[in-house]
Image (cartoon, rainbow, N blue to C red):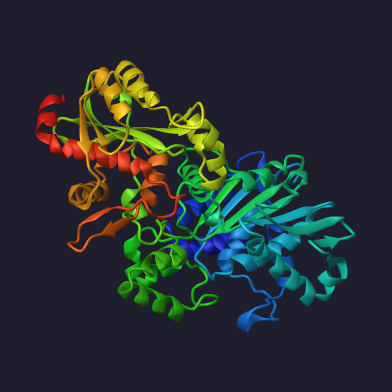
Length: 549
């Protein structure tokens, strides 16, 4: 009978012989519990669980570096993972339960080799199989495909049955193929994928391509969708969505045993100083990945702050913002929520960042409670409907999804009608929420017509400048509050995205302000609006505290 690598791995985890992340421990604790107490109608079939392992170790060879030409010998963590994915099947049909698999692992730990082997196994698992490897660009999709092709060329047995065609590999005996695709491929709509492999999902801003592949599997009996990646710098994209979903499954918030999350990551950024913890994000450390090379990278990062985000993100899978960002992701990320209904009858401070034609506009309100330093932030974004769908493609940001969830308003026409902002304060903030804005900040250089309209409705407005002297002390104050988790923005993904995009520039005196001259796709309008409200709050802090209940 085949060995149970899951139990072997779990024993090493429990004895601390293998140090793993909190999320990996969560996963295997659930798996081992199910081995002992099966969940009908699913059972664990050790033979089916082990077949992919046998296939890879029998027919697949490495093609790079010191292992080139040598038979692949899977490591224990890889074998255990494969058994978890392939082992749980329906007791009668023997069809797999696993549907989506998300693997996060530090770079150079053998992810591509492993998924290449599993891709070839997928070609042979059923007649008419279609294996598709996708990424943002064709070159990236070719990494897994070329590794699989090299395995075929080095194996007389595989080479006998699989041949390379112009754009794919084809197995005539089963009518199966293995094809690399990018988001720009013209053939996505005609797919019928049995096994999808999304490589480096951290680089994928929108989920359109992923969803096309996933939905193409609907006629398959036991389809699977692999996502493999290191962490990345793009926030609120596919990676963050899948990561949050995976964590919710592990935490029992969402019940979905067909979604498996293998999150090899540091549990805390401080663990970068403890080499004993490095294996949490690098399970192949010391075998496939060089410990000395990783140590050298860490030491370099400690003296080169511009290199540190790369090491933290790509070697240790701590989600980060782009290099040079104002806040780290750990600082800006706050998943706490609140019910805005709790503030009915309260007062608030407002702030607005009005856009140029076709751009994003944002309105912010800040509430507080007596004897509580927490700032409760609520926002509404506005974008011209005609521009929105173009920007979904160019900015690679899910404005349509945010609209459906109530974070953004699509304005009719080709520009934001500032009256929509006024209406939001009147109809939503005051009448629907029952919250009274006592002062609303705005950029002094923006629309005089909007100022007149707001004043005509009885709103008190304050002009806020955006120069170094004005901005720097407020941003310093905001930074401290973000780090102390004293800004609860209701886990608003649009604001989280804007915060992750915010970069700063510094004047000769050391003052900072947000930089709007950077990449046009990296919007920070939500941060600008928040700053504007914050400036008014700080300027009127004592009076505001006297008014809140």
